[in-house]
Figure 1 (tube, rainbow, N blue to C red):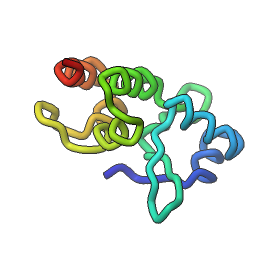
Figure 2: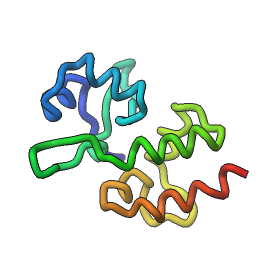
Figure 3: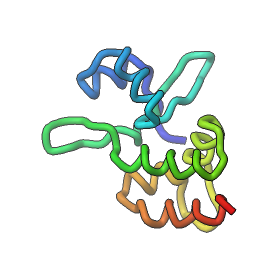
Length: 112
């Protein structure tokens, strides 16, 4: 499993407030994982950009595809973090390596 950041750690890394992290969770820009009843962000959801750390752009579109395929937000998050048939690594790890098409192609059969 990916390294996990607390809400506060994610906010500090992105240079935003903890309440902004809540908005990013609601918008499915970041994944939310509950650990010991505390929300966390997988570190792979945050990428190094030219001007500092930013949310990984491909997470939102991929989450939208999963939600449109009938997954709940929790199920979609679990799918993103788990090994999937036909993929060599968990989908979030592949997104972090910019292998977006491979991940999204794996979602297509799930929608039907």
